[in-house]
Image (cartoon, rainbow, N blue to C red; front, side, top):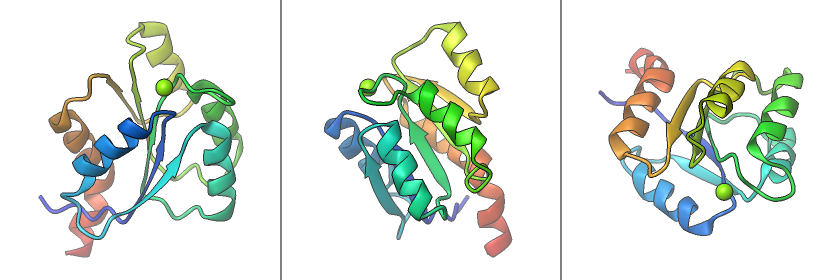
Length: 133
Ligand SMILES: [Mg+2]
């Protein structure tokens, strides 16, 4: 299925992870990718541009972590329409539940399986892609 993914915000404190996600997102041609190294940077980017189709979010980050980011994210009505997928090494159930309660639409545990990411993207963004065809 062709999914129209136009713009993605990657929030992770590892540059290597950013590169890895970029490779995984290459199948969505023309997709623009914006990098944020922590939650605060992500909020700053979102305050300027809120036309993202998807946010990929880490939990463990300096300055502002994923949980703190989600708390601020859900307070702001301007970007609540953007689906958030949490990708974290934290496999603990309480963190998963917390992030989902805070509004995350999906949760994947690292090491990331590409097919998990792609099936979540199709589920969360796919409908829009179908309508555009
Ligand atoms: Mg991290």
